[in-house]
Each structure stands twice: as C-alpha cells, then as structure tokens.
Length: 368
Image 1 (cartoon, rainbow, N blue to C red):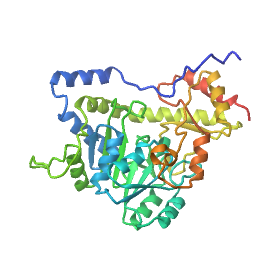
Image 2 (tube, rainbow, N blue to C red):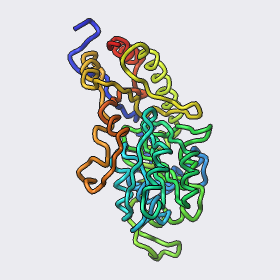
Image 3 (cartoon, helix red, strand yellow):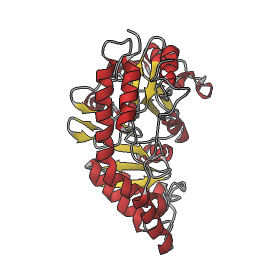
Image 4 (cartoon, helix red, strand yellow):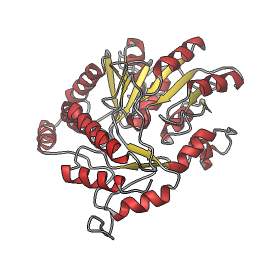
C-alpha cells in the first residue's frame, strides 16, 4: 500500500447537497400550515417547465410515478407496446407494465449506453403489431439520440417519452432534455443532480396531456370536481416542492461542477485500460454518473477502493434478465456485455479539489 492508499472508501458515490436555504424554505412551508396542495407545488412545476423550455410541468411523488402518469396521459394502456432500453433502472420498464402495456426491448449503443436507433428499427420490424410509444432513457446523464428516435416514433405514429431521471441539466442540440418528446419525466431522488428528497416531474408542451396528467395524479379528478377516470394519488407535497425550487436555482452550478470533474477524470484515464464516458458532439452530458468501462471490473473496483474511492455498478443485470421479466425472450448482447463491464465513480458537486485530485490519481495509476 502506498502513501496515497487507504483502508477503505472515503469518497462516496453520491452526496446530496441540502443546506440552510432549503431548511429555511421548509420552515416557511411548515409555518404556513399548507403542507400539501398549496402554491409551492404549482410554482415548482411552472419553474421547472420554464427551465426545460416547455409550457407545462406536473410534479409527482417520484420518478416512477412520473413515468406511469406520462404513459397514462398519452393513452398508452392495455394491449399497447412500448419500446425501451434493457439497460436502465427497472422502474423504466415497470412503468410500462403499470399501465398494462408490454415492454419491447432494443439493444444499446456500446459507447453511450443509450438506445441504438438501428436496433430500435429492427426490433419494431420484428414485432407483431408495431409499437405505441418509444420510452428513451438518457442514461447516466447522456442524452439519447432524440432526433433519430423522434423520427422512428413519428413513422410508426407512436408517442416519444423521455426518461430524464438522470439527466437534469443535459442538453441535446442546444435544448434541454425533456423538451423533445411528447412528455419528459424526471426523478428527484436524493442521488440525482437535484433533489426534493423524493419526487418526480412530467414536462410537456401539450395542454391536453398536461390536463390528463393533473387529473391522473389526483385520483382522476376533473375540473368540475367530479371524477371521470380512475387515477392515483401521485401528488407531490409542498415540502418537497419547496426543496425543489431551491435546488433548481442551483442546478446549473451543480451540472457545471460535475462536467468539470468529468473533464479532469477524462484526462487522468488517458493511457490506462479504462474507457471513459462518451459525450456525443451535439450533446452536453450532465454526468449524473461518471461511468467508465473496464474488461476486469472487479480489479478496477478493488484498485479504487484501495485509494479510498467508492464505486458502484449501474446496472449489473439488464432488465430483460431480471426474474420479474423472465417471460421476455430477447437477445441483446451489447447491453449484456456493458452490464458486466461498467463501473461508476464519484463525480458529484460535493467533491473537494483534494477529492478530485485523489480520484484522478487513482485512475492514472491503474495499469495500462
């Protein structure tokens, strides 16, 4: 063990930044007595929509319910088919099943880990009955190929839904993710680029979709106070919204810090046996995770641990190989190989300059 090595991880994979301003805003909500159904939620939705460059933002309880509500508001349901990626958190596919639809998986690009448009086109050609929606994930904060996926969705008269749970602050061709699809869905889980503790958001430019979202997350309530559909209670609280409004004001700084840390790590990895994340020319990666790739992941993980650097695998098992999806018969070799080789390391804004130097050294000293 060298002088730079330690007994165990000290730099954690995630570190939520919630401070005095959030506490003051929470205190104001508590004193108001309006803990739910108040102005904070509506204001947060409007502010987040403006950030994304769209007309409407509907806050929800978490990212999973955001996906569920978005699909329901787009009239995706029983008997429908939604094409998505097998390389994501399982909530992406679970939301499809929650509305009664069938997930259809296509393979991923080996560099970005997002849906490969050629594989998407092939999967649709092989499917019986076509598709009703494409659910694209911006994995690790890297925007998916939205132009190609939008074109495919339009050719099949299908909706395009963006799963932006890891991509707050990312852009595609200069515009924020979430603004290209018929709906964009975000998560505000504590490890995300911004947080509300727990929470989610659906953004859209379609007023009818926004109206259906508002109804669906509130038990199916209609404007006249009746209930004209069966919905859920997916409403965000004012406490969460208050946190979110403060966090949103910091988001650009958070993403800038993540991007700068990633730039330094990219330089450190040069000449090693580690593959760095890819940022397509027309995209700005938000680096929710700094995810590298290595043939011997276990050796790399052990090496990083000896330098006090935490790491995690997102995701070790593709969705179509999970027991809950054992009825899915799909050959997706690129996703399966990626699942055996990727490793995420700390990139969050809470890293100090000393932390960044230590992580960079650990990466540099990994053998070629």
